[in-house]
Image (cartoon, rainbow, N blue to C red; front, side, top):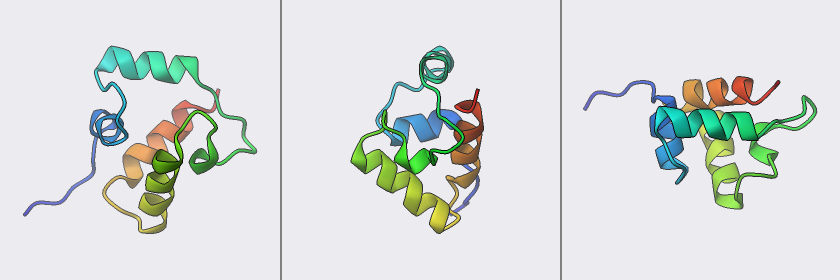
Length: 76
């Protein structure tokens, strides 16, 4: 089995969100996150999505790079 970093599209799919390039862009443009709020506490994410992100970060999983990219994209 080959393990590697996941893409943003794969992350959105895993989170149950629309995952085409245009849908990801719409999501990012429609949501912002204040610097004082951690991504796993984002009010626009469900509790399950928040827990997934928290666990992925803690465990430095294959999802971490995509989660980091999402985190940066939401800080406008």
